Length: 243
Ligand SMILES: [Fe+2]
Image (cartoon, rainbow, N blue to C red; front, side, top):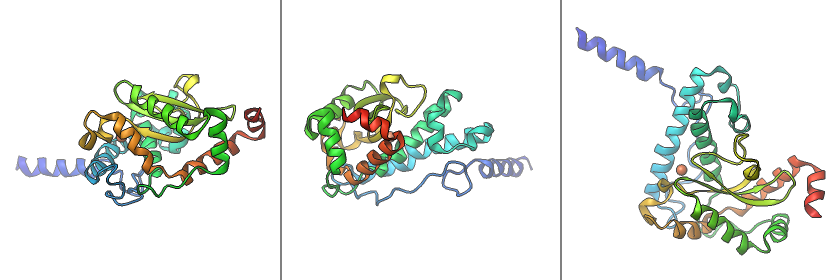
């Protein structure tokens, strides 16, 4: 008799657990915007399946579990959560950051060699703030290469409208109100330098992954993020950056 009761209890627990692929959770886990093999040979299908289907999903599941406990968390958009992260426990920081970072990351990539070029406005800003596109790429790769342990490299628009390269540890990002002021801004490009992002194909060669990754960047998408970030700052910041 005890065994059937235990089985029913186990079923009830499974039914009560938040499902990140369900439509009614506060923070859904969207499918990849392309097939898992779309980024080959730069990122292999197996890495994408594990990265999206296990690592990213775990962040989303954990965040939904925390939202079931913290009422005010469930009422926030994922973006607003990043900007108010200091109000919440470390577990929300790790899982909420992990969810936003990965959603952003998937959206920035496309089939190798099809990502076009930066818009005229973004190209001009890169030239103004780095000298040229290659110099920006080198600085970005260096940020990713020198991030000790796990984290992210970012290209951000700062509050003054200028572009900058930053790096954050773990699943932090430059939107969070708890990262140092010097690393804060609106991300327009980001690369995941956790080993789970590249280890199957590149092993310890993070530098090779970082340099190959440029083949995947969807510059149309990055340019749109740039335009939005500048528009959100308003004309004052744009004028200041132009000086
Ligand atoms: Fe990741």
